[in-house]
Image 1 (cartoon, rainbow, N blue to C red):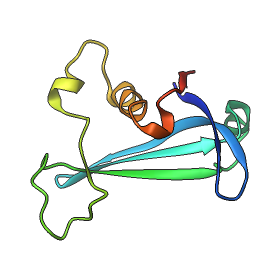
Image 2 (cartoon, rainbow, N blue to C red):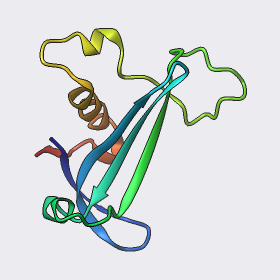
Image 3 (cartoon, helix red, strand yellow):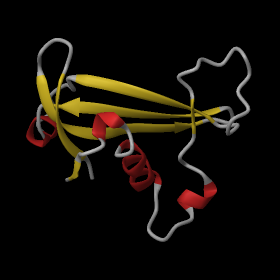
Length: 109
């Protein structure tokens, strides 16, 4: 499971294969790490990602203390989302990513 959408990095390198690399949970937050590769073949060959994006989710669902950075987001990994038939953190994560402007018109691969 991954997403396909071409993206040019700030260095000019172009990739198209977006893969969730990590999901971490703690009592205070959740973190979703997404990596961009030139292609699926490059990822399978063990090449390094061109870009890594880290999304931090405030686990307290809107109760953000003043010292929490504003890039913290409300978690898409709610009990309701995770309890849907066939849902897992990967499917929920990819569905959330497709709602971002960055990956809004990406394709499932």
